[in-house]
Amino acid sequence: MVLPTIAAMLLLASLVALVTGLALTFPDPMWKPMWDLNREAYVAFRRLGPAAEIFLFSLAVVSGAAAVGLLLHRRWAWWIALLLFAVNGAGDVVSLIHTGDLLRFGSGVLIAGGFVVLLLLPPVRSSLR
Image 1 (tube, rainbow, N blue to C red):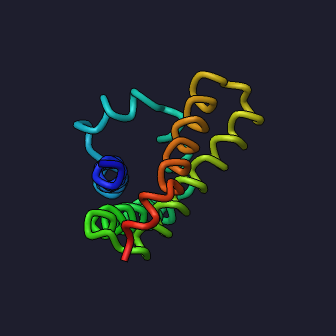
Image 2: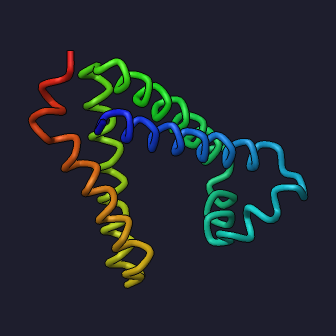
């Protein structure tokens, strides 16, 4: 049950990255409510320019591929998922230190760390081909 749960989270991450990339690529007033949820992200993405769109679309593809691979119990997908969650957790640690926002980034560290721990469980690793 662990791999399908992690795969579902990666598929959700893929969808979020895809929608965010589309919102940046095709600006429209319909995206305003989404950007109102996190104005800081909008400003940061706009500052990065087209690099943000490339990053988000790449993240969508990699996350989606890892999700499918995990459902097929592929070792390469396990490595990608482990890397994605480790990088996400490390980013949250840096943001926590920088901002002191314990609720937002502390919870992110715990969630990403939880997924890393789940991926490292012996029954999960032994189920991979």
